[in-house]
Length: 330
Ligand code: ASP
Image (cartoon, rainbow, N blue to C red; front, side):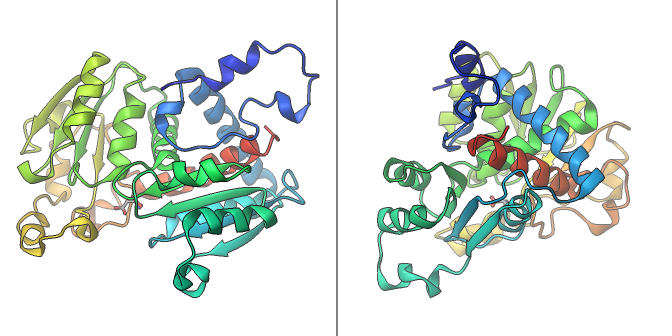
């Protein structure tokens, strides 16, 4: 349910300016995109924009000096984990990185609640990636410190969706009125689940392009339909490419398939190459949460519309903003 954190906080006139408790996201968990409303997003992107400017100006500064972030990853990650670590360090804070849970007490059979209760004795905020849907919510029930969901199985990836939306804002200066085409593995790709939900706060048209077996889950389709979002499903990109403003491509999530023969039949369903790009708008942007496998030809990388490397950098600023916010410094 959308709670609208910023608006709720503005109605509290009793806290003096600069009081940490007056910061709207102070002490809050970041678990799902459903917790945000548009004014929350404006607030987050405002802070992320300031972070971008600060990094360009001074690189590293002491906003979170003395604070510690524990980063607990039960699944592989390059960008999410390293951008959270970089974000904390650019804000002057310190880190407890646990990227290889097989070398922690998890390998001895420790439960998630106990691992979380351990880490919160040492850290001020916990970033968690876990293969099970709902793991971050479970962790948040046990933790007194803020928990940030860095991906829970095929469920959600809220910080990725925030950085995706921030990328669209920074690159195209608007979201209302855009046609966004999500392509690839829409069934198992958690980033598209979160992004579609977040986009539904805006006046957008969504195209879903996927093999039949990898369609967007019905639950998300009906959630967005109830909000009046125009959605359409396709197996081919060509009919919708010319109207697309944002082409968001995802990898087929091999690790989620129980049947490898099924994976083989869909793994190369789409390949975007320079020829594909000739049919796209001049101002379209191509996004991808990465890693990419074969779905975007490297020859597309030099096209100015290829935004996927810039998208990674925007992630740093959004994660700096989130850390500063939940720790009461923004
Ligand atoms: N890095 C993204 C994720 O963790 C996308 C992917 O793995 O395909 O969900």
